[in-house]
Length: 163
Image (cartoon, rainbow, N blue to C red; front, side, top):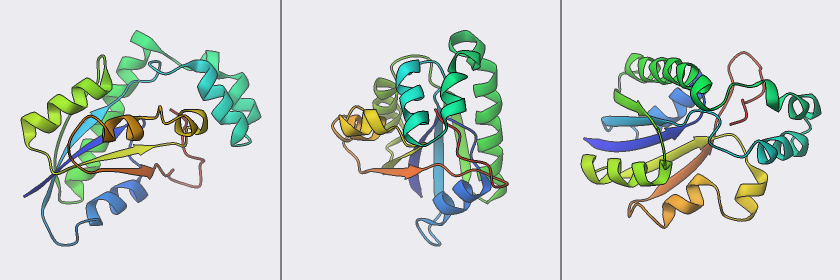
């Protein structure tokens, strides 16, 4: 069985599930989903990303979005939804919330599970990507397995959520 560690920052949309469960054709894939609660990223960087994507109103509302401890319950619901969606698609899936140091946890999970790859499924983060400070760029130097970056989709015509 092929093992994939999947790092996410929002619930998986149906398009995300379809994409990641079809990447390896008919081969059975087991997913370990790591959910990063909102708030462990810089609010200013998220606002800059919103502006760069043309979502000016969202940039002004960054203070209204739960962060830190308040973001933990929404992250648990997002993780449960995502695991359920992967299982409904026929994949094995387990997961956990990232409490601190996401890249250290990623490395530990890759080693513990013997993962074959990492997929980082995220919204665009232009500033972090430009300076190679995004999860994908940093993970490539840390985990020792291939790291694939995919952009998260949205259901029902909504724009992808910003992390």
